[in-house]
Image (cartoon, rainbow, N blue to C red):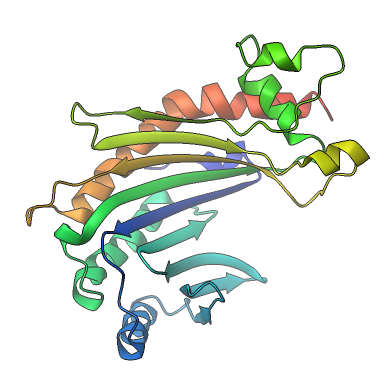
Length: 250
């Protein structure tokens, strides 16, 4: 678990997400006890935030940037790490959160709807993101036939694809690429330099609702599978073409 995925993009993140069947607790004492326990175990996480959306988050910041975080809202819990130098350290942090939530938030195996590990990559580009994505990922496809028409300009290209990785379809992989370009940007040829192209690769497991489900063990298996697929499929087939398409425009 020593891959340097951050070297292929401008920003790299890894997140663990537990999606629950039932709403999470909203009692003040429960919420504070959960985050106080995390802060005791990981002291650099010291910035506690309640957002207007109802999400609660405990974050570690460095130079004004969020580095690590644990958050939850109505029915999901997320633990993330930006630019991890060591993926194992990131996984250990996320497993520690998984091991806390049954006791601190009452999330049992029966309550877990799905468990995700997501590798996210941002690519800085000031220009038409949709054209980059179209050229990089859809060239020669049936979709590209529209973009190749005289005078046509891509203004909405955010491809997403999900595959089942197990016979029962309970283990899945999803890749999605997101453009931040709007028709207004293209029409006026004014692009927001701070808005990146984003790629999200998620390995998700829908567990069988049994008491034997070990979320920490399952999560680490998903991490290993995710890294293998990142190396074998996502980097060569998605990331490198995006980087090449960007480089050709600079």
